[in-house]
Amino acid sequence: MTRLTGTALRLTIFIGEGDLWHHKPLLTEIVHRAQQAGLAGASVFRGIEGFGASSLIHTTRLLSLSTDLPVAIIIIDTAERIHAFLPQLDELIGEGLVILDEVEVIRYVGRESVTTK
Image (cartoon, rainbow, N blue to C red; front, side, top):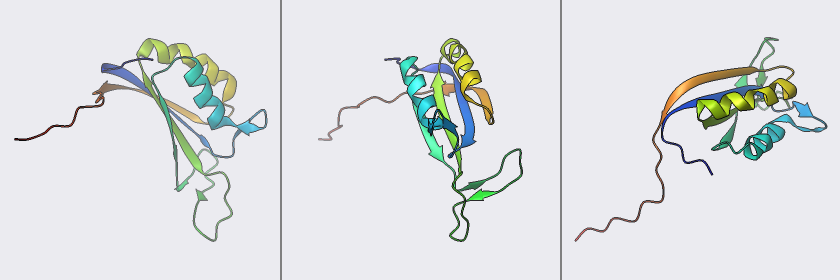
């Protein structure tokens, strides 16, 4: 397990919820590969509305039939580990957007409860 503090790289991947990889959700494949690569962690966030290169709006509004909502997968680790993972995205992503930016990580781990006297 990677214990990360200090300067790191944030990898944000924007794809559609309906994007598939070998008949499975692409977002699941990306998260599983990130775990197999030993990256510090990955989270998937589902958007409620958005559009991409096609300019077609996808939304959760009741009257909309969109099944391809935007999702963002965020992975944070050292620059070296993130750059080593990028070739896997080249294989997986047919259409989407990938952003890399430097971040400062402050990690909180299971603090003991503080009692006052």
